[in-house]
Each structure stands twice: as structure tokens, then as C-alpha cells.
Amino acid sequence: MSTAEETAGAEAQPWGEVTPDAARRLLLAAVEAFAERGYHATTTRDIAGRAGMSPAALYIHYRTKEELLHRISRIGHEKAVAILRTAARAEGTPTRRLAEAVSSFVRWHAGGRTTARVVQYELDSLGPEARAEILGLRRQVDAEVRGLIEEGVRSGEFDVIDVQGTTLAVLSLCIDVARWFNVDGPRTPEEVGALYADLVLRMVGAGEAGPAQR
Amino acid sequence: MSTAEETAGAEAQPWGEVTPDAARRLLLAAVEAFAERGYHATTTRDIAGRAGMSPAALYIHYRTKEELLHRISRIGHEKAVAILRTAARAEGTPTRRLAEAVSSFVRWHAGGRTTARVVQYELDSLGPEARAEILGLRRQVDAEVRGLIEEGVRSGEFDVIDVQGTTLAVLSLCIDVARWFNVDGPRTPEEVGALYADLVLRMVGAGEAGPAQR
DNA sequence: GGGCACGCTAAGCGAGCGCTCACCCTTGCC
DNA sequence: GGCAAGGGTGAGCGCTCGCTTAGCGTGCCC
Image (cartoon, rainbow over all chains, first blue to last red; front, side):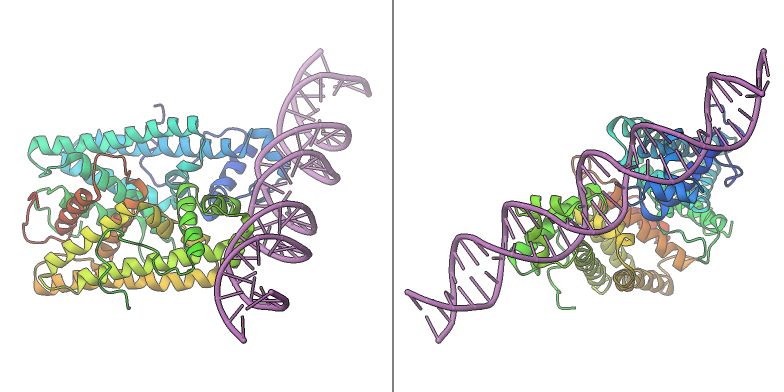
């Protein structure tokens, strides 16, 4: 709600809101470890080691290993909602705003692949209450994109029959970037963002912006 | 290579090739458990329990827990390749074949979500040699779809600039179905397959088959 | 019909797990 | 300078993990 202007960029200074410095280092180490090996395969000793601390230090700042995942997941989802909301509520036609939303959402998943992987693929590792809270944020993500597509359909720019299904597909396409994107691969996050924005505009039947290079 | 005609359907009698009956029951139990909780969160005691056997019974048919995952992953990937190959090498225009390939691939991911989840999301839990072998099968999957798109571009039916990027996006879209599809949800695998085939044809700019209901 | 190979179990080994506890340094305040 | 507070450590508890081993029942072969 308060983080307004630092939403668009790649990841300027992420996790800035995690206040005790040691707690932030631990959280960052946990993100890396969870992304590399998965939540269940990561040990608290590994997290503490990456942060340059003893295993016991973790429990000064977090009650359990799951609380670490919960914090990561919530901050990441809030960031995702903020990115989409910023793009969706900007000025311009639905076409332009949808393109910007997809492009920035994809850039976030590709550039911050480490974080995005944890956020998108470790939901089931959370306990029931934590998962329920995160699912609420996911509904907000869905609502932003669906609203944008509905707007385009209403204005006649888009040609979509199954709005909810298309929304699901668009989000699915963006989210899966976190699974396959390779930092050492041939594409930059910006290139994938541009390609995907074009593909999504085609999916919604946006007036032939065609296969332009931008 | 030999499995030729039993490729298209949903999952007629899967795992039929796993020969000792107890070994198949164990493998089926492992698929369920891995899909529900992930490889690392699943215990060998849980797998054996689901199969109605003692924990030690597992080691009569499989050397390690990882060998179970390896077998599941290989059989699943071979099935995936077979599905795409059958559709890609059928008769008809590239448009029709691409639609059929996407539709059947999606039906497999949605209907056999349990298996597909393990196959698509537990690759990193394999050791180096096993992972290398599976990656070879994934390259075959990629090649089938890429070949189909190239064919459509050559024939003038498709309008695609970045063939490799579009191939990646199409596969990504299909694969991610295994993550979000819910058997109790409002859509059948067939419906999702039809929707996705339409969306993919739009992505490749296939001549206005438009938003037809089929 | 005696022997034996095979599929399976009960019990348990060593290791590593998440997490705790008693204690130690540093820092800031009077 | 004394001292409380809080961030940090070394050692280790209780537990569960993947996997092993000794032995048991059953059915097939000669």
C-alpha cells in the first residue's frame, strides 16, 4: 500500500524493508537456498552458513524455518501485486497498459528469478493459515490482469471470449518464466519481456500491432 | 520408439510397462506422494505405506529413492515426446497439427496432473547423470514443437519472428498447466486443451481461425 | 517331499534434521 | 565503572530420515 514509486524497476534494493541487518542477510540467504534446492531440501544450517552465522542465530530473528518462507512469500507477492497494479492503473489504452503489465511482470520473474522461484513454487510448503493469506494476494494478482482484459474487451480493442481462461493463461505464461529463465542464457529479461508482451497482445486479439520489433 | 498407438488418449493404462506388480504399485504410490508433497518432503516410509508394504520392500525393487524418481521421470518424458511426435507427424496443415499437438499435450498435463507435476517440476531433484539423460528427452520435446512452427512459417501460415522464443513460450504455457490445473475446478482437460490450442494459434499468427468456438 | 530361491517383514544403524539452552561478548546508559 | 539488554555462539537433544540386515513364509522344481 505504501510502496508506491519503487515498484517498476528490476530490483533496485529489494528486501530494504527487512530491518535488522542480520535478519535481512538471513532472509537473502534463505531465498538463494530455497531457489536452488527447494524449501524442504534446504537446511537451517545451510541458510545460517550462507549468511556467515551459526545455526542458532537464525532463531533469534525467526521463530521457525517456515516463518522465513512466509516472510519471503508475502513480500514477494506484495511486490508482484504492486508491479501489476502500477502498470494497470497508469495512463494509456488497455493495449498499452496490458503490454506494460506483462512486460514488467516478466522482467521481474526473469531478473529476480531467484526470488520469483521461491514465491511461485514454494506455496505448498507453507502451513494452512500462511497459505490462505498468500492465496488472498494471488487473487489480487488475478483481479488486476482480469480487469485489464475486461477493459480492453469493453473498449473493443481486444477480442476475447473466455476472459477468465485467458487471464489464467496470461498469468501462467508470465509465472513460468521463473522456471525456465537462465541468467547465463541468450536472452535478457528485457528481451523476454518485449517478446511476451507481443505474444500476449496476440492472445487477446489486440488490433494488429502485429509482429513489430517493439 | 515402440509405443506407437497408445499415445494420444488421456492415460488409458499408464505404467503398464512396469513389470513386477509390486514394483508398479510402489511406483504409483511414489508418483502420488511426490506430486502431493514434492520429492524431498516424501519419505520412503510414506511411499511403502501407500503401496501397502513395509518400508524395506521398496529396496527390493529399487536401489534408492532417487531411482524411483528417475524411472517416473523417464517414462513420463517418453510419453510427452510420443504425444507431441504423434501430433506433429500426422496429416494436415501445420495449423491443424500444431493445434492438435497443443491440445493433446495440454490434456495430458491436465488429466495426468499428478504424473505431469512430478515429471515437470522435480527435474532438479535428480542427480547429474539422470538429469542429463532427461534433458536429452526435453530437447526432443522442444525440437518437435519448433519444427512444427518452422514448417508453418515456411508455408506462410504462421507469422513468427522469434521462432525459438515462441517455441519456448508455447511449451511453457502447456507445461504450467500441471501447476495450476485443479481436477475439482470448473474446467475439464478437454476445455483447457481447446482454449489453449486457440490461444497458441493466435500467438503464431495463424490465419484468422479467429476466436471460433472450436 | 525336501530344498531353495524369492518376495517380504521387523528391527535397527548411523547420520542429519529442526530447534534449544547455557553462556559469552559488545554496546549504551547512569 | 557497573550493569542490564540483546545479538551471537558451541554443544547437543530428541527425532526421523534413507537404507541395511537377519530371518520368515510360500511356491516351484527335481
